[in-house]
Length: 128
View 1: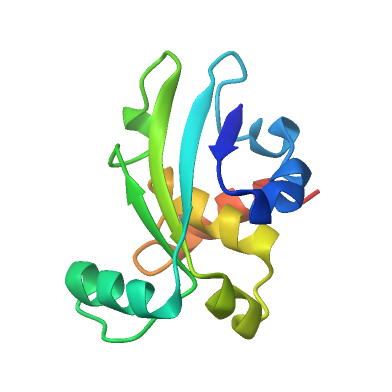
View 2 (view 1 turned 120 degrees about the horizontal axis):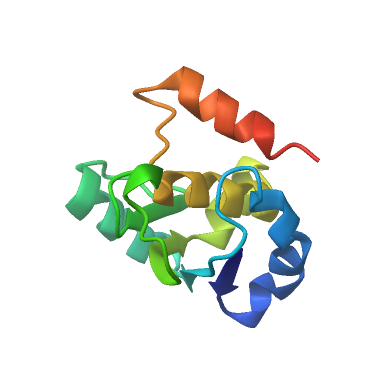
């Protein structure tokens, strides 16, 4: 199960991300926590520049505590943090739910840029 510690602006979206959604990827007897931080476009641009060398805002950045899903501890633990820029999310039409799923997959070690197959397989397992 994953719970999101996030501002109220995302409460409805987070409520939609039921624990069943993650049951294909995570052990059901553990509780993992994701910190979600809302930042504006200027802060996101600065964070994106300092961490990825990209001088532009983006919708979501993930900062995992583990390299991949195999490294997750076999007990309750934090997964890491997501930084979300809602103006970018809304502008990109990704949708808040998709943004949180996308960012959380990165926290679990999946990377669509380096391993399309693993990303697609994980993403497919989340289809309701």
